[in-house]
Length: 353
View 1 (cartoon, rainbow, N blue to C red):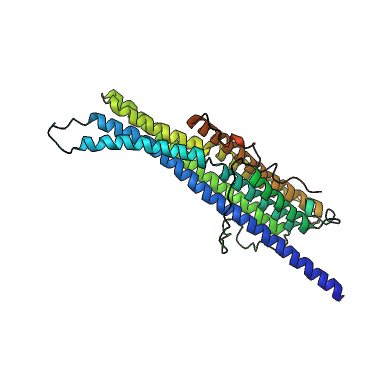
View 2 (view 1 turned 120 degrees about the vertical axis):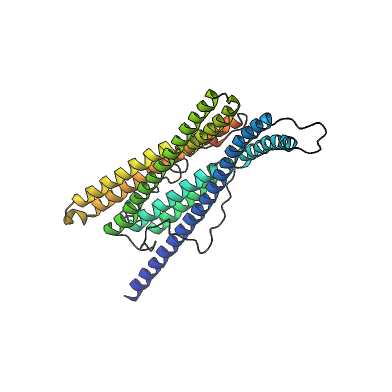
């Protein structure tokens, strides 16, 4: 009996250790993905704003009357330097963005983080590759460890440019990564899984869809209003300012396209609907069927497939958006098209037999 107790304690210790390592890998990917996203979007927003500002200052410069010849300093002379500096700054930022930050790191890291999270939940539910029947020869802990190795390898091989992953802070906050009440380590029952994974993800999709819809509507109405303002300016003989309104509308349109707000909104709504259908299906089962392992496995498998499909679609959409963006800015230099669509999802976690 003492030997069995020791063996059980060792297994529990091994399970805890591999889960801690899995969550650490997730934290590293999640932390760096957030950093890469923030860096990339701030840079793109700055470029778009400066592009608009360059047009606005050029128009302002053109309408300012020339100063008297004897004046040493004038507002128009100062604007002359501004008109020169802003386009040069934009060119430098665009060149730097094309050379050093194509957004590929953000896409790969986010895809890797979601792949790790998916494996953690499968492992905790003890289904599919981690079920008792599938772990007679190779332990579930060994399979999860190999999954983590594959994901890390794919992360660094997915892009031609290497991606540096900075370790997340030791006190990394998992509040946004797991549902309230989830300790991240305990084995999951069907009720726990539905509450901490399915419903948590469903709530996330609904919240994101609501925010995206509001942002999309605001931006689209802004584009229409600015376009109407341009028409008004042309009608009252102020054609010179139409260039400013056109540039502003184009900048907002470029931002909408970059963020893929419309496609993301449709994707989130679809994923939320699919998860809700899975919840309804589970609730329709009687207690006897809910206790059958195969039905729990089916629930987990279908739920994780829905989440994977949504994330895979996002990866493909973002790669296409980034490819279009950089092919337009620098046709001679390859953008995120160097990555194969879905590399962070489909290829990142091949099945382990």
